[in-house]
Image 1 (spheres, rainbow, N blue to C red):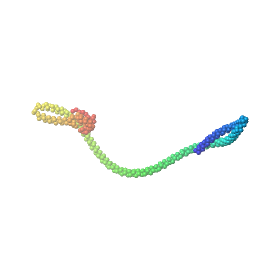
Image 2: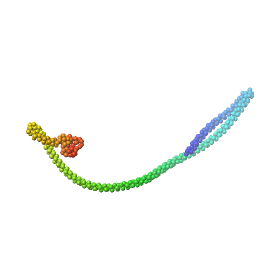
Image 3: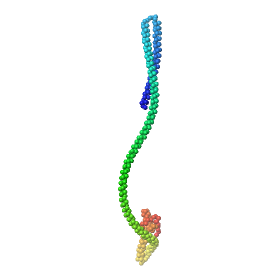
Length: 352
């Protein structure tokens, strides 16, 4: 295809050069025709002008008969004849050149026709070559596509082979790992069997201990029932004691009032009677011990300074208000006497 394009370019260049040569020859031909016509005109003028001049000169100078002038005229005539001969020769040469130019023109026309035919043939060949080039390009594209498909298939085959190799290697590795795991599992199974035997022995021991514990629990449950019965008895006794305590507190309040009144009376009666000094002193000691005992029963058992003003309803123990509030603030909500838990709702007030 490139060679055809190069030949076509060369043909176009040759055609252009031939056209330029034909134009040059046409211009030369026109110049030669113009020169030929000019030479003919000059020749006619040169032939006519010497004869007229000669006749005039002879007529004018016939009277004088000057030979010197005749010789000059003859010399001029000879010169003019030479010039005419030279013009004729140049005319013949120009005719020859014109004939040659016409022959060259005919040859150039023939070559131009031949080159035009060759150009048309080359155009046909170029069209055919272009069609073949397009067909070859399509075929080349199809071949490239097929080549790409073949390359893809080859790559896929390579990948499959690599995958097969990797799969075989992985299979071998998996087999080795499976054997190792099997060995490890066998070892672990043996260890587990041994541990199961040990666990069975431990289970038997635990069952034996469990039976012993059950027997102990039964005995403890019996003791617990006995303790519950004892607790119920103690609760009933404590309730009775609480009731007795209430009665004692009431009697204590009454005795306290009586003691205060008797102390006042004794203080009034002490300076008046001197004979009854021993008797009043005995009664004062008795009264002080009685007052001390009763004050111990009335005072708070925690601080031993303040009187009892609060009662815990769950256990019926009595304390001063400050000690109960201090236990509630410290979040130790247990009775200081029996350690039984109580709530703020279980705190009540008493008046002795």
